[in-house]
Amino acid sequence: MLASRRGAMQLTSTGELESIGLHTCARIVPFHACHDVCKRYLFICRLVNTGNTPVENYNNSQPAQLQIRNGDYIKAVNGESNNAESMSEAMKKSATLDITIVRPFTFTQTISKNGLSLGLDLKYGPGGASLLVEGVREGVVQKIAADVRGGDRIISVNGVVGTPYVLMQCIQENQHLELGMSRPSS
Image 1 (cartoon, rainbow, N blue to C red):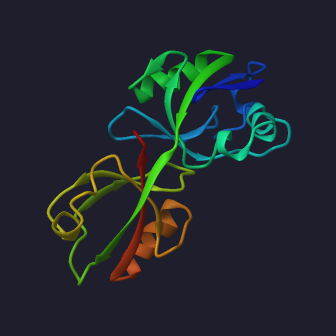
Image 2 (tube, rainbow, N blue to C red; image 1 turned 135 degrees about the vertical axis):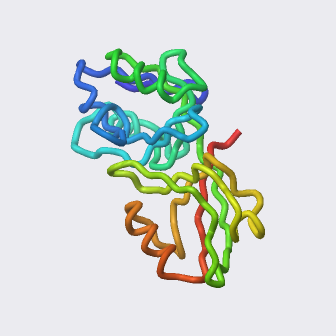
């Protein structure tokens, strides 16, 4: 069962975390969630639609604005917050999950590489759908897109969404980039 209340949801599983309906990086647990470099949020890479999961049931019973979506961020799990590792552990240990979700703030950065390095340290997880900006160092991004920071995610490149491999390939093959970015909203 999944219930909503003021930005929080409660999931109850039958003890099988795989059955909840959200996917995590290394293995299926309740979410396909990637740890942010700041370690304060979990990123929902994608929903798992297998039929009758608690997340699907919840989403089917809610208006669009209250549904859990790909790209949302998990802010708290069972009272654990501001620590992605603790939240991930809480999801593994409990059959009932009280989850607080925040929507992403998305924005676009237009960058012309002109043969130079972007200056981004990027990281990704298996099965992910984004590239995590782990750090910004000397390069084009630092010079022309100073608002990009560690913990942001690249979710599209030139309108293309896909696996981290697809996103990296687009970055490497193009000099002009329209980077779709995401970070947790406040």
